[in-house]
Length: 112
Length: 113
Image 1: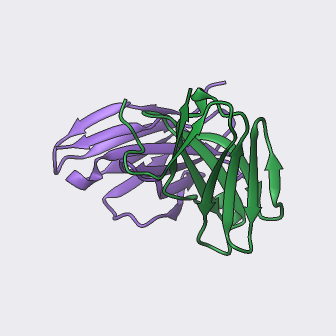
Image 2 (image 1 turned 90 degrees about the horizontal axis):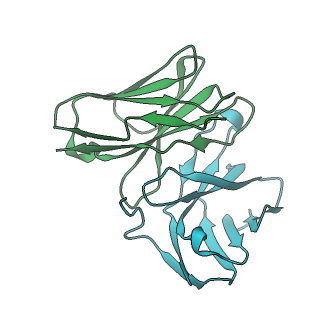
């Protein structure tokens, strides 16, 4: 049974560019949440997708957007990258009716 | 891989001892709490969770205690092993299955052989 998978594992971009990160949830899960983790800090909630719609959003600007596909996989898009966007981006999946979120290995984004 | 816990509170224990990691949460309305373990270069790994209608829950070598009066959560690890070395995060949530998780700052557990 595959767990949560994310791609790519590492990414280097320059300021002003755009990036797309991908996530496949754990088998049987239909809800995907995205988190940003700066070095030395705990993950911070970006947003959550269920039934292909954004259901909740954290305190992140509109430069951060997402999408969920019919197969429950999800993408995180970040436009106009800033140096401060450098972080580990984590995807977590869960099933409706359960609060437990399982995390993927993350995508390490470096903005130069 | 990179180190996640460069400036985190650190708990140093001897192999075989019991470890207690503490966490204060912020929201009185939180009704779900969860502990994660994060090793360097990896995503958080689920350890154990507890709902607010309980004050104690046990797993394999781990116990979580919840004190709602003082908004305090603890994780006890019995017979700590070198493989337990990692950063440990507590997280709180509310609102059922639609909840977002709010994470604490984390504690670095260093197990000395």
